Image (cartoon, rainbow, N blue to C red):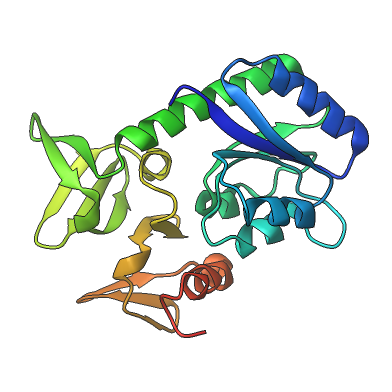
Length: 233
C-alpha cells in the first residue's frame, strides 16, 4: 500500500484546519474530504471508498462511535478526541490509534505511520496468515477460521477441522485479521461473523461451540451481526 486515502471528520473548525495541515505534510496520506459532522461523512462514504478516518467522537446529533456502528464496513479509524474510554468498544471498529487533543504533529505522524504499517499488513494477508507453532510456520486460510480463543500468552485458532495454538496475543490478531470479517465478542474471543449460527442468551453458537458474549459488549455484538444481515433483526 503506497498511499492511504483518508477523510477528516470533526465539528471543530480549528481542529479540522489543524488536521488538514498535518495530513498535507505526510506524503503517503491522500486527503479525500474534510467533513464537519458525521452526516457529511456518511454522504461521502456512500459514494466513495477510503482507507482511513480521522474521526472525532463527541459531535452533535451523531457521535463518532454511533456513526461507526451505522457503517456496514468501517474503514480503519484514528480517533481524534479528548476522550479515552472507548478502547474496548473500538476493537470492533478497526481503531488503530487514539489521538488526544491538542494533537502534536509528532504524535499525529506516529499514528499515521502505524496506520500505514497495519493497513499494508492487512492487504498482504487478505486470504491467509502464517503462524508459528511447534517450531514451524503453518498457513491458515482466513476462511477456515471459526473463532480465536485467548489462553494467557497463547491463542488457539479453532478451524473447520483443526485447532492450532500459537504464542501471540488476541490484540495483535485484531490488527492482522480483516476487520470486516471478525468481531470481538469477549476479551478472550474473536469470532468470524459469517460462522455465527445463532445467539442463545449471552452465547454465540458456532457449530458445536458456544462462545460467551461479554455483558458489556452484547448490545454492540448484536448490532454488528444484524447490520451485516447475519441474524434476523
